[in-house]
Image (cartoon, rainbow, N blue to C red):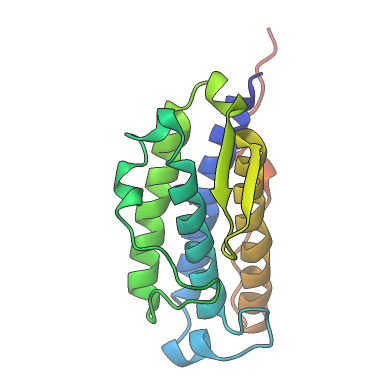
Length: 180
């Protein structure tokens, strides 16, 4: 089984989980979504904005890969976030719409990658301007892990607000293997 297959699984899982999180968050009032709950990014809305900020930053970096110029072309047109806690959207509807769009970009990008593309060394500057050169596939793992980490925080905040998002395990997205 290829590394690319696992990234396709993570992209599909990411899209599925974001859908579940936003559906659950949509059950809360704007006041409840913006309420500071003591999380690292304060509120549910703040944490969801941070996930979108992180996704945008990383996808714009990934778009510099020579093989990704077409698959992430629309992402390169997005404005660069100014901080990790930037509120890109202050309402759940607009935030959800942008995340759904970005998740489609992620799935499209992953399906167009080849195994050879994953061995690329990506040169980029972090948000503090420090130069880094890291293996593309390792950075992709970080990208998906970052989303999962912060969605876990959101699911806890939603639970504390009385909203259950249901099953969140990657296992739910792994297809049954067929034995021959």
